[in-house]
Length: 323
Image: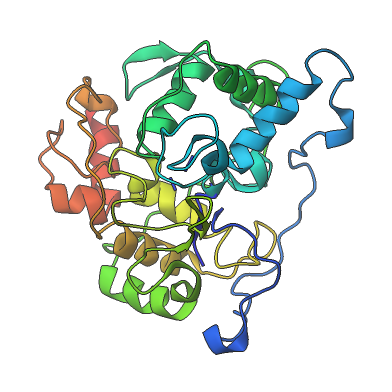
């Protein structure tokens, strides 16, 4: 089921198979939500509209790097070996073009921008670097490298029709309403076994492609998955990702999970072991730290456990009152 993480950008988390898994892996999941209209949502530019200029090959190379990161930059990468074997599109589905699939629709229109995690104004290069160090649990490419230049060029091309400062509808991940209870890892495990295990493995190890050092379906936890500094390690991000994209065949228009299932699934997956990222320099201003960030210190008196699993409404209300 899960991450394509893609594509990282956390870790589709699962890349699209040639066909839906066979009945032996479980019957095709049923729709759980009514069909939602797609009108007025961002639409990516057509590939054939890439300008026929000196930059065309760079843009195409950037797209290739996002879609098949591990082939070039993974453990057996042909260019460098600086990442964990996942692809950017495991988190940023369809090479960063899927509606509510952590797409790149607003990257060019909103960067550079201030980000509270670093407490600084960040460029697109900084954002990509963070993904390599967190979602791909690796080392960032040199900022002046051909690979970094190509990925930036591709993101700029994707956002070429989005006015500066505008965030189109369908961008990024959907923000789900908080539950009235804590997210339940035990229930999440039941959902995982029923809807995710056939692609991502009993132990979340994914299905590797040993010849290339990459994955057919990416790992959701363990040493080769995203680390605990990645955006998808926050429950709200993971739940917002899977509710519109997992299991295979799901979309913003046709969900295959309920929102409650998405929260519980997020709680289970993000309760499993994964690499640790030193985050001592993150969230220097504690008042800006997200309420579902699972590591202390905090600007409030709620526990780490509640910040990780919820209930989140009380924390959100307290944060509003403190302003």
